Image (cartoon, rainbow, N blue to C red):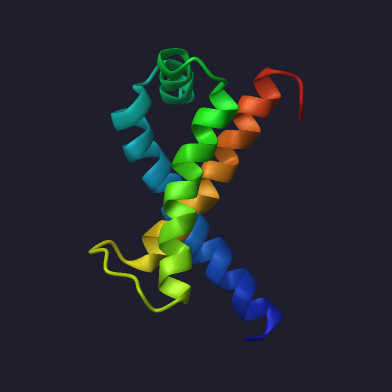
Amino acid sequence: MKSEELFELIEKDILPECFAIMKTKGEAYSGLEDKLGNFKRCAKLAGTTPEKAWFIYFCKHFDALSSFIREEYKDSEKIKGRIQDLINYLFLLCGLLKEQSKL
């Protein structure tokens, strides 16, 4: 794939869908108030940090991607959605780190 084709795929397909997913799933998980609230609440319940709670969620999607690469993927969700979820989780980590002045 040529560079311009890859950038077009990212700009016109992958990222717009990532943002749409983040908006719809984000509201379902965290509500409208705090987009990072889910990680904070789970961290409090588990007695850990929001970053560690984030990591568990991230690993779930990474494990699905790993299964796909090993040709063992059995999930009904298409792998593109899992990849977009991973991208979104990295955006969410940026938010968590920014709040703590670590970014």
